Image (cartoon, rainbow, N blue to C red; front, side, top):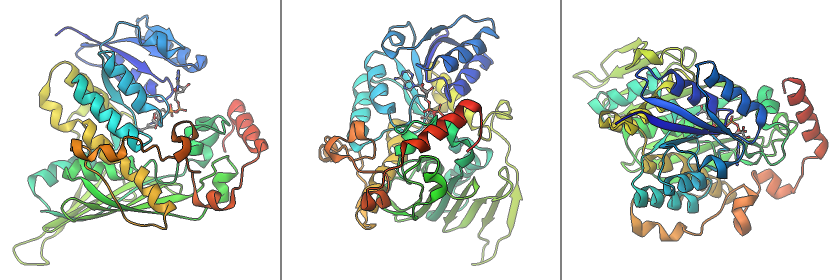
Length: 416
Ligand SMILES: NC(=O)c1ccc[n+]([C@@H]2O[C@H](COP(=O)([O-])OP(=O)(O)OC[C@H]3O[C@@H](n4cnc5c(N)ncnc54)[C@H](O)[C@@H]3O)[C@@H](O)[C@H]2O)c1
């Protein structure tokens, strides 16, 4: 097969994938088009290509972009709008790599899966936290049986975004980051656990901290951190903590019946492993920095993860099925996200446990075909709910002046 022609939709985060396509060592991927309605980002992305001697088509309008001659599209648009665009793109005959998240509602989850099945197009999910040197190594060790069967996991995606909130929400009241619930972005915490073990979540209960002013002052009505408690298909349990705590870091612990693996809380490149010895309660810890499976990942964003998501996608487009076990398909992508949707439904219902369907089974899909429950008004319709329980109880609306001030800070390059 000749070179694959790739377009990128969304030129904020999308610049990372643009950089990876442009740097592709075998020269078998060609960046041909970029789309973003925000001209400064679009032009900046175009300049990245120009610096490599490439003239790339720039579009502000998606309907024009989709007409461009290309084999595949990287979705780096708004996190709550990936599924409908992915469906459209696959139905137009192109392959898709989707940034996080997979879908905003259960209805979209069903539609996305069915679009992949109907079109037969390649869909990969760019859950880059699965490809850290540590989390990828956990996957390799788990598959080898080094810690036996998973009993319990703990995972955290803690990202205090308060200082960067102006530059990532631009003072827009309706930006998805201001409308998402505390557990919506659960993919970075539970993703690596599901990727490592291959297990499916079957039940979820959600919990939310109280609503904190430090995020509300920046226009985020949720202002809470969320916790999900999951049961996996083998009976293992998972505690997942998300987002708005006063810390930045990702931590993962897998407890098996033959040992334990955990990432280091203060040295993110380090992994600690303990395997049971011949006798119960024997066996020593060992700690090390796992090597990347491809040294070219060194220095790439998000602990090297940004290298693998794009390059594995390109490998798949080029017909290299050796990497297929390492890419995340639509079913696992949905498994990594729908606990956040259903988890918020649990939060709204006093933390009740909610069954997570296996949408691989066609007969489980019908119950969710019209399920638009979510915190995004434009897709939720009559099933829309506010993005936090405090707001739901108090109906407290953040004043316009807060968003004006956040916008001013963004425009002046000030931090939150
Ligand atoms: N995996 C990671 O580590 C990671 C890190 C950052 C962002 N992300 C993801 O990347 C995506 C983009 O995030 P972001 O940080 O760039 O912020 P963002 O969501 O605010 O930016 C999206 C960009 O897409 C453009 N866009 C959206 N809809 C459009 C439309 N209909 N037509 C034209 N342009 C449109 C916007 O103008 C904007 O530049 C999100 O899904 C986010 O979750 C992932």
